[in-house]
Length: 294
Ligand SMILES: NC(=O)c1ccc[n+]([C@@H]2O[C@H](COP(=O)([O-])OP(=O)(O)OC[C@H]3O[C@@H](n4cnc5c(N)ncnc54)[C@H](O)[C@@H]3O)[C@@H](O)[C@H]2O)c1
Ligand SMILES: Nc1ncnc2c1ncn2[C@@H]1O[C@H](COP(=O)(O)OP(=O)(O)OP(=O)(O)O)[C@@H](O)[C@H]1O
Image 1 (spheres, rainbow, N blue to C red):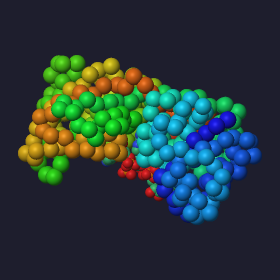
Image 2 (cartoon, protein in one colour):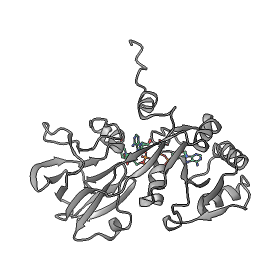
Image 3 (cartoon, rainbow, N blue to C red):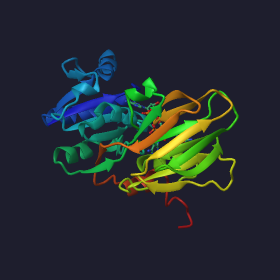
Image 4 (cartoon, rainbow, N blue to C red):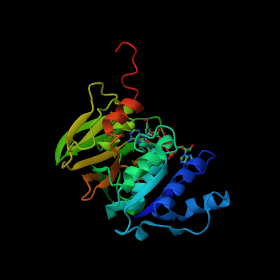
């Protein structure tokens, strides 16, 4: 078995996690290829030896890898997705961060859960992604053009709201007057969209959610549409530019540009361990059932 190991940060809490993973994988003859910046961080702190092979970019991750293990929080998983791209390599998240909604393996259970990985006792949860075309073209979007959580347009350098003309499959939907608009995948429905009043979708639902951010049209509400819908946006406002984000990546786009959002032809494969299903994560991470009345 061959796995890629990726992390963004080093903290004191990293050492026991890395120890657990490395001891377990070495004992079970799993080949580990480590992202070069992460290995450098670990080498500097003398946590792992320098004997491991490394990778630096998505071009080196091919079908010979069985899995990518992401060590960190949800932000690290979103970055990991930009490494695997359309390769189909499944991602497993070990939560070294705070919430870890997508990073489902808790650091207390690493050896137990890695045994599931070796025994192939896991399922794959396919996550739909969104991509964006901008007219006129915008180079910084073209570089990594997909989002696993959401694509958001929002105001920039001003408190003044923006107007977002929105079309679904060429039919006019609405002109939102708001701080911004979120187009979320089912995966992203528990992220930013949820904070703005959007519904939670289970990961396998074939839909997108259009959620306005603080709309001044008080009747505007989150809307669920089929994920085959082509969504076109035209933003206008007092400033010359507005912000477009794809997950954690942000760029600036000129007013009146035409943005076209579509589901990507490929999906990201997330590893789902039997003990850590989406429904269990909902209960544990969103504290469902904590109300003492039931
Ligand atoms: N007000 C908000 O809730 C808000 C605002 C901006 C961005 N976000 C989310 O943060 C993501 C980017 O993450 P980051 O690490 O760069 O920013 P960050 O460091 O600000 O973290 C945002 C928080 O959102 C959580 N999160 C991210 N994706 C999630 C998901 N699919 N389900 C449940 N929780 C999720 C993370 O665990 C983290 O606690 C965005 O894609 C967006 O979904 C949320
Ligand atoms: N490899 C790591 N080792 C130790 N701590 C880490 C590691 N990666 C992330 N962290 C901790 O988790 C924090 C958040 O990480 P990350 O940006 O990946 O997630 P996030 O998007 O903020 O989501 P979450 O709320 O799930 O942590 C970091 O600031 C750091 O404190």
